[in-house]
Amino acid sequence: MDITITPDVMPYRPGHVLSCSADGYDPTYTWTGDNPGDIDSLTGSTYTLVEGEFDLTCTATIEELMCTVTATGTVTGTALGK
Image (tube, rainbow, N blue to C red):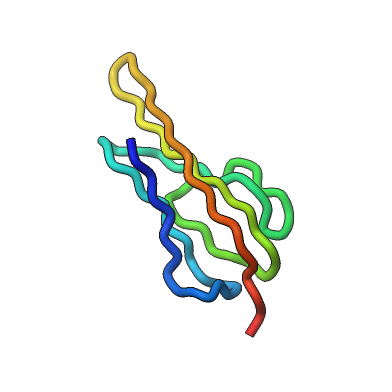
């Protein structure tokens, strides 16, 4: 399974949305990492940046019958204020 994290605009700014996508049937997404505080299991395919440095991981999980497949992607940078 391939996973892609796409910024909507660069350079990163507070309020910009990161989108996580994976190929496969009906994946679920979980974000973890720092921006600027710890993010512990935020679900959904998008994440809105707040001001400060970030180090984020999106995990996509596909559960089909008796098989579970996961993939992760990471993105790092700094979201600077206007």
